[in-house]
Length: 159
Image 1 (cartoon, helix red, strand yellow):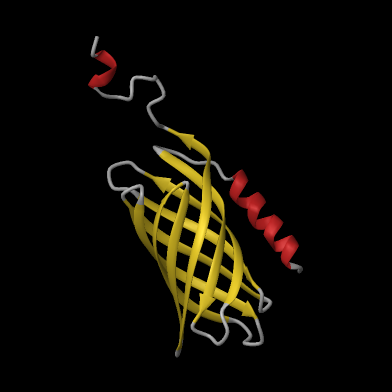
Image 2 (cartoon, rainbow, N blue to C red; image 1 turned 30 degrees about the vertical axis):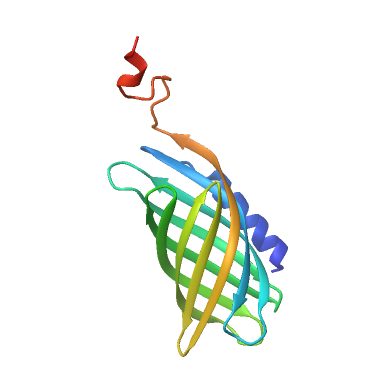
């Protein structure tokens, strides 16, 4: 199956999922510079994250990343954060690039507000890979939030 077909399938899957409770879906593009494995390379990714902000903010993201070394990565991370900064960790499957398929763990620290910066570490058996990136994400669906225009607080009643 070609990378383009995998990309389209992943994108359609993410866009068609529906959500419950107090939540938001964020989708966006990522550009990373990968280092720690010879010459640095650039990779492009599409990522979608589901955020549930009821009580404790938590999230799960799904992504697919394409590297210039003809390497493709599929990953998912559990996330938490305070809106403008956070951390995440989860499994990553890397295929291609002359190394075959490798299963590993990745962790990410990020800062953002629609446009963000992240620093990612990937661990495969005896290898460590690092990447720094920039991304832009937009909400594609929300539900359960207070939509009556008074911000849910006393500011709406100031007059």
